[in-house]
Image 1 (cartoon, one colour):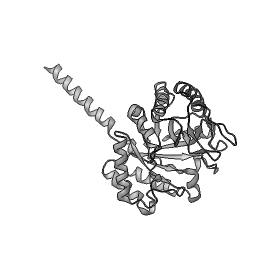
Image 2 (tube, helix red, strand yellow):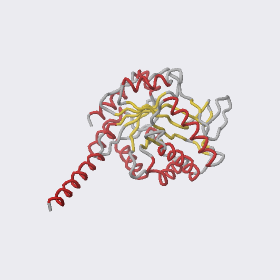
Image 3 (cartoon, one colour):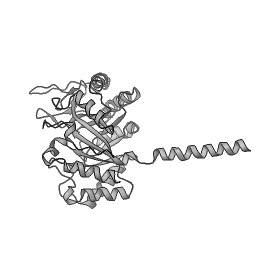
Image 4 (spheres, one colour):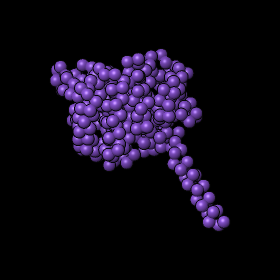
Length: 302
C-alpha cells in the first residue's frame, strides 16, 4: 500500500512539473529583430537589449541566388547577403558572450536581391534540399548560429513543392542539431499564404515560431482590426506561436501611434502574446531604436 501511495505521489509530481515546463513563460518574453538587410552599418551592439527578455537577432538574408547585376537562382546553394562588414562571425560571438539571453538566427529568401525579386525556384526537391543542407550547414557553423527563418515571398514552384523542400530541410537541420529553433515569416497574400499553409499542414511540428508580417496589412489598421487579424492567423497556423510585428520602415499595419502596444497588452491579458518582432534594426537606427526598447519593456513586464 505504501509503495502504491509513493508511486501515485511521484506520478502527481511528474504531472505538476511537466505542466510547469510547458506553461508559456519564456516564450511570452521573446523579442526578435531582423538585421543587416539594408547595409545601414548597424551592429548587434547598437541595439538595446533588455536582459529580462529572450532576444533573437535574425540576420537578413541568406539567398540562393548569384550576386550579379542580373541574379540567377542557384537551386539551394545559399550565400550570405547581410552586412558582413558589421555582422561577421566575430560580432556574433561577441554579442552572445556579452548578453547570454541573445541567440542569433538567419533568414532565407527575402524580397529582392540587387533590385530583382527572389523567387523560390528549385530544380527538383531532392537537389534543392541537398544543396540547401550543405550550404546552410556551412553558414551556421561559420557564424555560430542558433536558428533559421524562412522568408520567401515570391514563388515559381507550387505550395506542395515548397512544403517538401522546406519541410525536409527543417527536419534535417533539427534532427542533426544544426539549429535549435526554426521560424517562418508569412503574410496575408493569395500568392504567399498557400505555400506557408501547405508547409504548416505537413511540417508545422518542426516550426517553433510564426513571424507573421502584420505590417503587410494596410497602414490605417485599427486595434480591433489587428486583433481580428491575429485571431485569423492563429486559426490558420493552429497551435503555432504567432508573434506580433511592427515595421519601422514606414510600411503598413498597426502603428504604435494607433495603438500597437495597446493591442499587445490586450493580447497579453488574454494569454495570447507569444512575442514581438520588428522589421528592422536597419530602419530603427535613425530613431535610436525607440520601439525596440518599448517592445522589450512590454514583454519584460508581461
